[in-house]
Image (tube, rainbow, N blue to C red; front, side, top):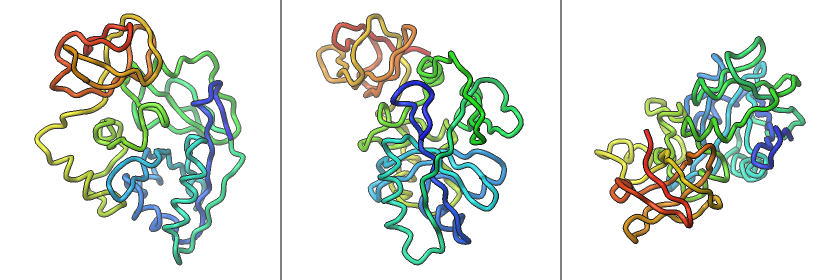
Length: 251
């Protein structure tokens, strides 16, 4: 397990090895596993109904692929992948590899975070993380959801911005939950989803949002007068409240 200072930052690295590794993962996850040869790839495992089970980074390590996942999700991810393994020549095992993070261009031996350049780099070679970084503030500024906070078992990944975050490939072929995700992609527009809001005040993560007395969504991570909210867009055009906090959509 690796941690960068808070419980939500705890990470576990799972090693996937064996001659069927790429083919096995390709049929399960939302992104193109072949891209791992060029660097870090962000992806998710979904339910057959198209809902979120886990998100993770896939990193190359020789012939193996490392899955960098939030520690609270690691055991469930291992179990889910094991159920799909059947006769595939694949081995899954947790490791003691530590995840390091930092800002700026990726140094030698590290990988650029594929979600957004502002999220810096990640490394798996034992180097220390850069200290003093407010990762929550960066996530809010770039509208990057976090496992277990904005990303829950009720999440549809397109509502969470996975296309913008380079976490889904619509050309790679079938994977678990692909049909539902593809249908959402081809709708005229999403009616709900994550958005950045300006926040006056502070309330607990998960506080319901109201607009004109009607349910409008939920407020999640907050930092520096801004926050990430899950909103019904048709009710989010003006002033909103979440507990004692006041909200408005921000650019």
